[in-house]
Image (spheres, rainbow, N blue to C red):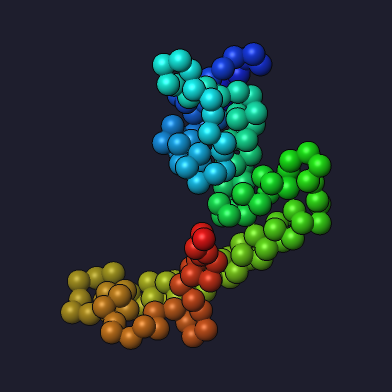
Length: 160
């Protein structure tokens, strides 16, 4: 549950985390990789966040929930800045994400068929052989039907 935020209040990292439903470690990580600007510090050295930071972390969380990678989120954040908005560029990023989701769905459907077929061949009784274990113990690399990749393999990207 997200905590309401008063408009004039400076928030600690714990308060920001509570307001956005994000762990404090995640907020620090977003700062480290540049998705969230480093906030000013109080006299005691405590990070102090504002409403802009709350909105930015919520933006990042919504984008993560849609499966966007951190690099794409960085691009979306840049494109969301006043004067930098470009619906065409945002659409291009979102379209790539949609295509990645469709690829993963197709891979999951192939995985489901392979697993369903294997489970259907398993008697479930005590037996010297078991179709599921035989498939898992196979020395061959073709657990999935021909032409299918491991789920997510084609969509994982490395950050620079």
